[in-house]
Image 1 (cartoon, rainbow, N blue to C red):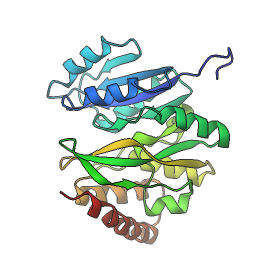
Image 2: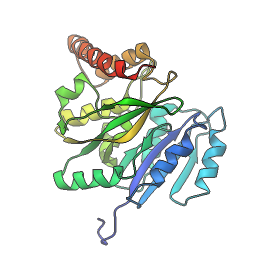
Image 3: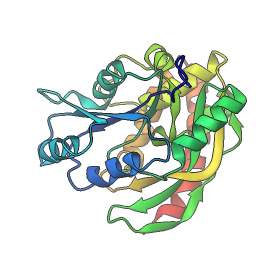
Length: 260
């Protein structure tokens, strides 16, 4: 609740790049939340397909959508930071442009936040392939996760997170290396290392799309980005390799369920 007794504004951050086929369903899943006091901040990152036009159409259909356009492609990190900087809510949620939310997602997360006083709320995930077909598997999550546990596997999906705007801006990396990194993972790790708390809802309140073209679908690229993430948060050489091995084992266990 806000100081005037009304429901607080939650800002939903949605970077958009070359996603004309999926973004409409993504936006509709956010607008369909049972918690209604939201704004969706879409930053269109100079796409090469029809994403910009699709975003304009969506923004014209609901006043809760705020649309911004990058004049040139800025990449996911800078685009996300730009969107967060324009958020009007004290708390923000993220969704990637090809993922989906279940209607109770925000309502359930806000309730858990208020009950526990935690700093990050995340959820379990269901999965679909690039054509929208469901996988018969759910990524379950623990009730809470700490720094050392998260180093071994990033079970905090970016599209599931609810977090304070100021905390994200403080802990998110400002730049990423040439070969990329998992900037959201680096943020959650840095926060947990500094004593922030994360609590999970073990229900698939988000649906994650697995695409061959996605970073997660390219295991070699994801591995390089993961090592860069560990380096970004200050892990030493041997620590990086130890946790990379743990991450790889957990990743194999995960993606054996996501084969077609």
